[in-house]
Amino acid sequence: MNFWIIQGLNGLAFGSLLFILAAGFSLIFGLMRVANLAHGAYFMLGAYVGLAALDAGLNFWLAVLAGAAVVGVLGGIVERLVLRRLSGKPLAQVLVTLGIAFIIADGCLWLWSGDPRPVPMPPGFEGVYRFGSVAFPKYRLFVVAVAVALAVALWLLLERSRLGAMIRAGVDDMDMARAMGIRTSLLFTTVFCLGSVLAGAGGVLAGPILSVYPGLDSDMLPLALVVVILGGAGSLTGAFIGSLIIGFIYSYGQALLPDLAYVILFLPMVLVLTLRPSGLLGRRLA
Image (cartoon, rainbow, N blue to C red; front, side, top):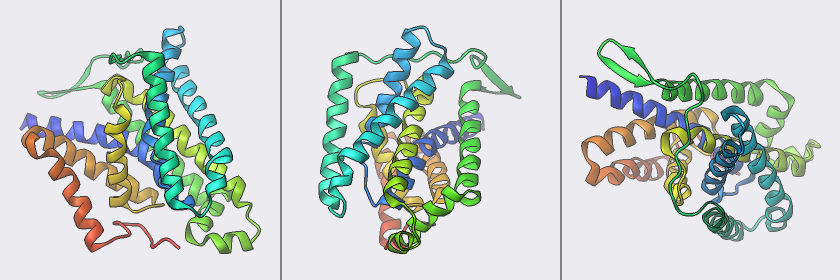
């Protein structure tokens, strides 16, 4: 019985990490129709920047801010100087973001070498909580709490703020949003920076669980893609539900059927795309 409970908690923690990563990806894809294949690289770059901040003597929370800030600025620059020029050319945007992902990966390898680097737990989150005979790391439960808080914060931003109303208008009908006087260019940059910030912060928060290593980007990006496709592009609720589903499938699949883990993971995505191309809670994009 303990096995099922612990794997369930592991799935919940991993799904929470996926939500922090995929929420930004979903917003960017839903609003800008850009399948940003550099999003996984942003996640890895944030982790490396956070690690560098820790090596420089900053505490864990400042390291999270440093990773989020650096990646957020990079995302804004990429959107302004590169993707803006490729508006309406989805294939070119995909190829460019893929190229940026390779550049970031090689840059990280050059700067931080190819050795996996552990990230220490923040003070106060070492050790485990005990629930009867079950022990579970404190930090993983903290990550779950962060994901829930982030989901609430993003929901309030999208549903209860003027910026959120503009983002929803852009997701629903971009041409109508422009006609209503919404400055879509500024909106694009804001959303792209927000998505990048989430990826950078998520990379640092994931460090104590996953460590930091070359290839972290290529490990996480396919999972984020599955989450967005499963939940529906542009849907925050869909990203949250999709993250938890994939987190549980990944956790139990790796433990019970490791040889078929990817079949179990990607088969739901194939079925959803076949039966409901817009995802569980997504809308058909204009």
